[in-house]
Length: 211
Ligand SMILES: C[S@@+](CC[C@H](N)C(=O)[O-])C[C@H]1O[C@@H](n2cnc3c(N)ncnc32)[C@H](O)[C@@H]1O
View 1 (spheres, rainbow, N blue to C red):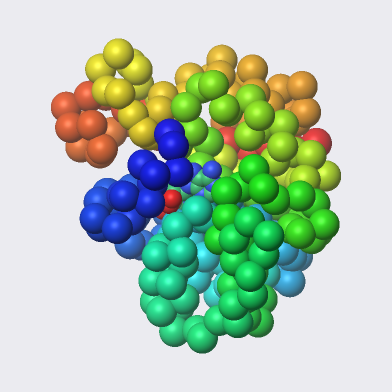
View 2 (cartoon, protein in one colour; view 1 turned 180 degrees about the vertical axis):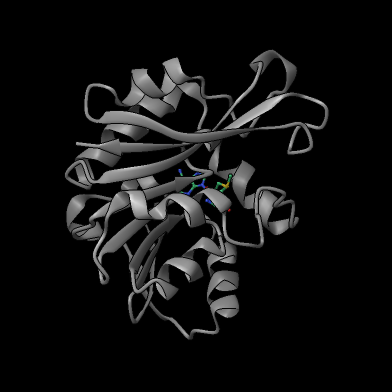
């Protein structure tokens, strides 16, 4: 997906991926990460997800990365927070107490810019990336976070029945991307037919990835 694809989605308000409420898997399985209050959680490709407000409410610090400044202006407006905004070489840094959002292509981040994180929450990130850049994303994510544990939400369905995004991520693909870096555990899954691809059987799953 080119950057322009996502910028247009936000400009035209075609954001069917935005849940508007806390993701159920996050709510039910966040404890599996066993994080202390005050831990810093990275939310890659964050959009304006309500999950950020929920993480802040749990006493977490949040760091996000998102291409669209339009999305991040909405995020802060909905959080009712006036951010500080600083220019970066490749984007902007929006920040306030306990929250840092990099408005940039995630591939322009490095560990210094990101700072230390104790965990990663990936909903709508890995599944948004086409196969040819997933390997680079998975390696880069583990590298800039010192292999922080992850909670990853995936979809699986017959890729031939729907073009994506979100792309199908069968277990074999999660293993290909992450089994050399993490121990993988599928925590839960549920079947959907009324989601993004109406009438197509989709398995929505949540994974715990630990060093
Ligand atoms: C499927 S949406 C998911 C958003 C959010 N995680 C959620 O659950 O609502 C993917 C988001 O990633 C952003 N994005 C896509 N490619 C990106 C990249 N290379 N770097 C940073 N953000 C990116 C898009 O603008 C979009 O907001």
